[in-house]
Length: 135
Image 1 (cartoon, rainbow, N blue to C red):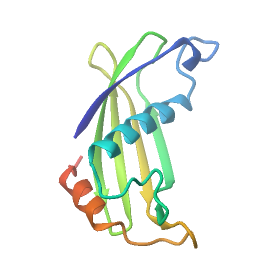
Image 2: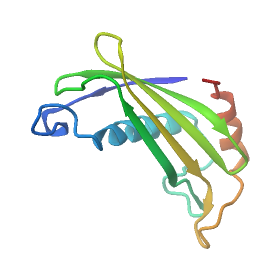
Image 3: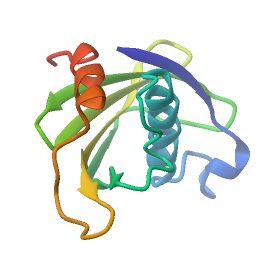
Image 4: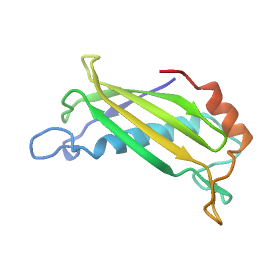
């Protein structure tokens, strides 16, 4: 499990003063980028010339209000791993340690030239596997 914190700013909110629904995915993606950098893989997948890791599915459940000024504790867990794809789950806790939101993203490895599904690089697969947990 990888843990990070995300600060909720005024510009993240809608006119009702709660998080605008799509910003939960921005928070999740920022934690995803941090996590992937900590894996220290042989290739930098953000700029690699051979493959991409696009998100092919995303979902979110909003359980408690998230407001400007909140600091969320985000736990990222690798919950599923296949030869060419992986699923990440994010649990986001408010300052009262209450589960405020849950997010899931599914990523698939695609070749950059043909944009067809390919097997993940071995080092990435191994490092994701080392971070896998059942939920």
